Length: 374
Image (tube, rainbow, N blue to C red):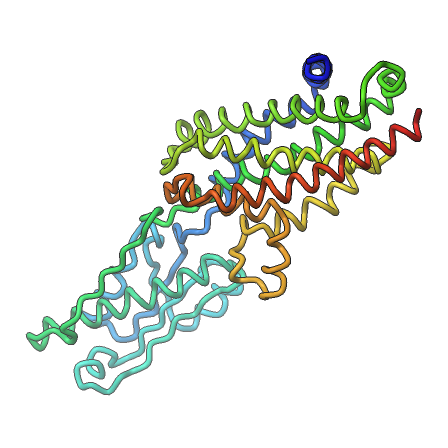
């Protein structure tokens, strides 16, 4: 009981210290509020208001149908330009897409001569170029198919293809980036807060005071882990309810309490990493540099930015030893696909097992450093 009381009161001291550190407090508030909104609304991966121009050398019914098929919100209203203006306009960045319909296009289509139609794309707008070219091809193909069906009186194909998109029917980027922003902030702030707590004790000279008290290194480390973990867990819960659901209007398919239980398990790993880095760094700048070396690979390769299947097989296999990979996996399963404990328990177990190993290493490192300091 005495150990628990020591851990509790040291944690309360840590919370008070955190509340008086306005920089870290502001970082937590910003990371789980404004940063999530900015990431969700500015990092759009959908085609929206793509600038497009039409070069209509045919001036037929089919060419007019193709021009009128490009409509908002995917594309801006098409502008009619001459063929000689294609290169100058695209050099100036005026249009991302230019559709060049050649002369006698309708006549050649009706005659079955398979005429060519050119789509010029400015690929400096990378996301819109990739998505927009696919949309443009689909729109043009659909219009030609409908035109021929009406002209000949029979459909060209007896098959209708229905595409069903699960979990994000409109393929809205904000539904993905907002939740992934919270997940990335959990790792970032858990490492920063716990590491900064150790460095702050050393810089303020209060670590020596703790070492002369009847406290064990385990009690000191655990107090910092539960206090900083509590701050992040509360921030995650508020961010999901207030920012993601209310402000951004993103639906949460699964159980938030189940996700929060996974967050608590993961925080033991992330805060342990912070404790370990805090014992290595001698100052806040050093902690910042070590944080970048650890966090950036974990974040980029965890599956939150790109699927593991897109990585080289050896790299995807190597990342299985990182709890952040399993954290992202069960977070997506719960929040996006509505998975229950019967589905995500292997990831929970992996995070707990690997996180416990890192936690043990961090405690050993902290014990050795405090022993040297005493």
